[in-house]
Image (cartoon, rainbow, N blue to C red; front, side, top):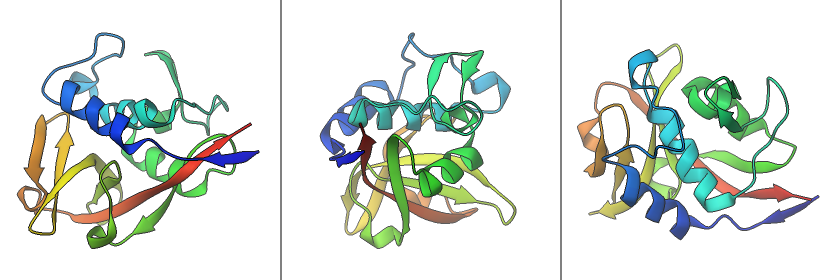
Length: 160
């Protein structure tokens, strides 16, 4: 297995195109828990082009009924990204101030991660984000003040 570079530009371009609307190739989870992590996964996939099809613990989307929990569930996304030893994206927990465009911020309510945002830019050192559920593009992270933010820095993509 080798580690290849994550294409942050592709992820950001995807976020710009789809932040305020839905890509019809993917199910919209807004009515059943929220679409934030589904959108974040779409952005990440645009920048890595590799899914991990491991049943139950992978990160993949085939259709709404055949997908990994990590594709659309914030806590599962966190678990996969920080422990993945197989193919697909890998991440480390990072301070918010050290994130790059294309990285992710997850909001933690004291019990679990419940919202996933993609970093799309910076203004005065503060991350600007894109997200679904409460659709946003280039919105300041400070607009999300009710929870503790955790940074996920994508370090690369495992590939065969």
